[in-house]
Image (tube, rainbow, N blue to C red):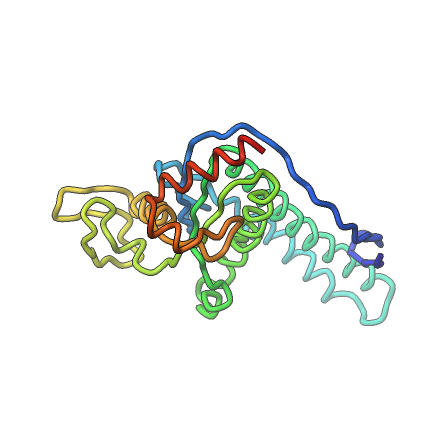
Amino acid sequence: MRLVKRADGYYVQFSISVDRAEAIAPTHQTVGLDVGLSCFYTDSLGNKVENPRFYRTGEQKMKRSQRLVSRKVKGSSNRRKARTRLGRVHLKISRQRKDHAVKLARCVVQSNDLIAYEDLRIKNMVKNHCKALSINDAGWYQFRVWLEYFGKVFKKITIAVNPSYTSQECSDCGSIVKKSLSTRTHVCQCGCKLDRDHNAGINILNLGLGTVGHTGTFVLDASNASGESTSTLIGVILSEQAVS
């Protein structure tokens, strides 16, 4: 047990060891997720989920609260109250971001038997100061944590894949089509024309189906993967889950 102080009061946290598991019927669906800043993610079917941008939405209220803090006399009770109000604004934004990640991750896991996503290094990405605020506001890492958690709860397969060239490679013929971040449409000489993120989502799913998952609910055995097709191996796992 530990006591935690938040801007809106004190909380007691209890650490309890519980093996949580929920049984749901297999959906026989697979999906690849490509996260972004314009949209929170685009899946391998072309479906998009808008980025809520909770920090940007509450930025004006936050700036106003910060100005009120700076106007108060240091050490006064009014300054302490203003700081508390500012802390509550930050706390609300963090709770909104967590609530969005939890609900969205649960929905994705319940709707699919295999979820492939990029193994992003967020700490390296936020070194770009032009995009650091937007990346932190998106909450990709928190979304991934809850994906893996619900994957264990519902006994679904979650696989993190190498993100290299997922946006550049053509999902139809495999050719590398160089494009800048401002180019939002993938156009290949083979005739494939897709939204950039949709193309990346398909590549992520193909990597998840064809390679060993190194992070996630299940780690596929390399010896089995080399002797059997990926679809057969996944079918065996899903049939075992249905029997259990």
